[in-house]
Amino acid sequence: MTHTQQDITPRSSDALMIIDLQNDFLPNGSLGIKSAAQIIEPINRYTELFERAQSTIILSRDWHPQDHCSFSQQGGPWPVHCVRNSEGAQISADYRWPTQAWLVSKATTSAKDAYSAFDGTELATQLQHSAVKRLFICGLATDYCVLNTVLDALKEGFECYLLCDGMDAVNIQSHDGQQAIDTMCQQGAIALTLTDFNHH
Ligand code: VGL
Ligand code: ZN
Image (cartoon, rainbow, N blue to C red):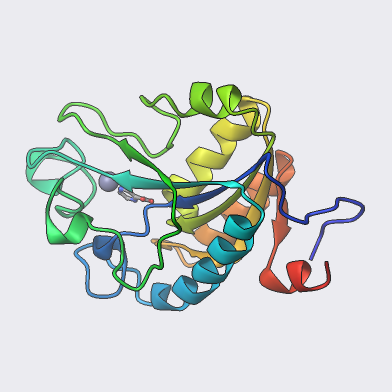
């Protein structure tokens, strides 16, 4: 796609970040994205590529208490989703876990929502301590948690690469996902798909 000179071959100083690949955001979930099943195999493939390169692999998860402020019963915008320890909050059973991964839980307290995996977590510090330079990001949802994670990552100074065939959008308005990708790229992210890696 739009990368020009960058060598995107995965390295040990890279991190693959998989945002909120949880049952509630997948087709049968309470906030299910109908077309999202198709991102799982690309994400499995990315996981293999980055594991082979000994990159850091990070999975974030939305991990809400039962009375979370984002739930409509509490006056929030969303149906009940990703209640911690529930089936809906589990990472998809179709995801093939690498041998090692970091798990980052976010939006874990009732009174505060957090779309970004950097919001209220130690992620930035942990990445800096591990000398990670580049983030390759996929997951759900392009127009909420992926968008906010990438914008925070760019502000923190990380190079960001969007794995576009590994993400999908809620699309309350039909172009929200494409708009989010445009916004992330305007801020410096680079959009890629699997075919970009096969050439390397
Ligand atoms: C998300 C809506 C509500 C997301 C989380 O992971 O993008 N979206 N909570
Ligand atoms: Zn949520």
